[in-house]
Length: 207
Image (cartoon, rainbow, N blue to C red; front, top):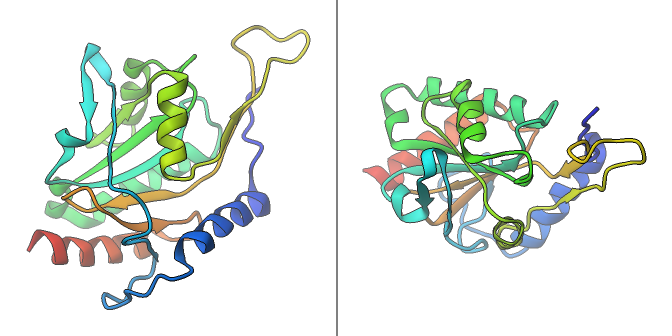
């Protein structure tokens, strides 16, 4: 049975360590953010990956939209469906303003997750969600860009070739309409927290 090994305290500790390394000198609190303010401490949104229907999705295609990015995999038993449900609830709370927001789900398990499988998976949660993946190297490069930790374990004796464990850290990276990294949400942030900060960000950047 698939399992996500980084959970509970271990995941929170890993996530907080990454946040502390990013935010040690962070000081722009003028908007009174509840989430982690990562402006100037993470690179802009930049990617080009295979998407559903044989198409390609890139960061250029999402210019003008606020993007909620997180990494996972379609067979994830807990973190990913919980996060997708939470972000879908956030978009519902935004109402008409949600038209300017996109959820971007990147699979770290390209062996089992095709772009079509991913898009069908995220569509079950929200029509404004996008699912993409890529080669092992493409995913490793993108994860490294945003300091995302993940690992794919080798199949255990007696397992089939497609039966293996995937571990991944959690966190939602929020980019403004120009592709700049602005906020980072942890698993302890509520729908209300994320919605509140997204409204502030949309006010600041959308005008």
